[in-house]
Amino acid sequence: MASLSSASVSLVRTPTHLPCFRSNHGKVQSLNRYSKTKTTHLSINSSLRMCSIAASDSPLSTSMYELSSKKVWIWTENSQVMTAAVERGWDTFIFSSQNQGLANEWSKIALIDPLFIKEREIFDNAGERVATIFQVSTPSELKKLHPEAHHVENVVIDLLDWQVIPAENIVAEFQGSKTTVFAVSKSPAEAQLFLEALEHGLGGVVLKVEVVKAVLDLKEYFNRRNEVHNRLSLTKATITQVHAVGMGDRVCVDLCSLMRPGEGLLVGSFARGLFLVHSECLESSYIASRPFRVNAGPVHAYVATPGGKTSYLSELKAGKEVIVVDQTGKMRTAIVGRVKIETRPFILVEAKIDANDQTVYSILLQTAETVALVCPHEGNRTQKTVIPVTSLKAGDEVLLRLQGGARHTGIEIKEFIVEN
Image 1 (cartoon, rainbow, N blue to C red):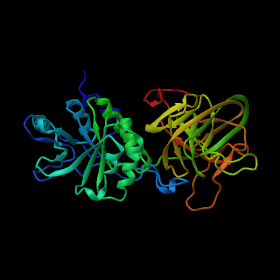
Image 2 (image 1 turned 90 degrees about the vertical axis):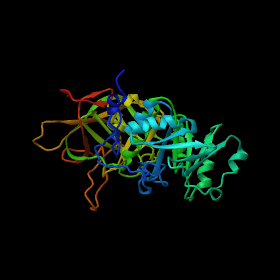
Image 3 (image 1 turned 120 degrees about the vertical axis):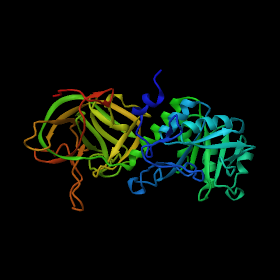
């Protein structure tokens, strides 16, 4: 079997700080030139930034993914899990007091911060207490947790009979406290719910697993949320042709989130260029606004999904994720709640980046006044946000997302391809 360090690098993004591994001679091999002394404790306070949708990005309230530090500690005896975690920037590991030998062995391989459990307390290598563990299995035990009762920086809670409601109660109880609360999680899905409880989530998780995939999946979750902090580059394109083409199967995508003016989904007939199709959040004299919906196009069209991937509109279903983008390229992740496919009349829209460009970008959209494309954002100038497809004409400018055209199962690949 291929080694984890070589086989898994392409699965996730490179961590923000590069992992440090020791050579056979004990010297640290690191690309970021940092050194660690005996008095340095790096990862107790080191963490991965899980970025969020700012309050201004949401039409209702602050985001579920507040811009805050979310810490991840790993509890495992599997060396491959350790390697995967260190490669992804998580280097704090929890050991039982009987596993001092394993901690010493791993410390010779990589720069890790070992923590040790002794009688429901967690100590660092120097013997300093850094956290207290509480095992909770009943409502009465949960009620005993109070921020003022603990004089430690970190509290680790092990919900033996795990439920969502206790996690929410813990978040509410410790809100505003300086104590960082961790929850022991036995799967990435469990960790995700702890990190999202009551929108703000707990301060961190202790991922207690023995399989590498759990680490990869949790890191992928962090990566998807970190995309919210990024902006996509959108390009101005000029409409060259608009004409009716007949009937087809149209897909309406209903999200579990509300969209605001200027936001929509990236959709196109070719992956090389996706149009920003506006949501139905605007008021209309024809029909009530539906700010959760995008009338996205035909079943064959591509739609942008997290991780730089695409899906066919026909592949979307409840529970899948898409990215919502606004005029400025700011994006966030949203969950699909429902997909409706119905037969409707279509128009073909074609565009180019400039008159001399030979590449044509196209999309088919339902012929309806509530279906619109988003216009370029021109600083603070007052201008229309969208153009309904029923008013679209040659010479109008819309927004386009340019990317690689070749795809394999939604993943961009480098190969020769011709699409017309």
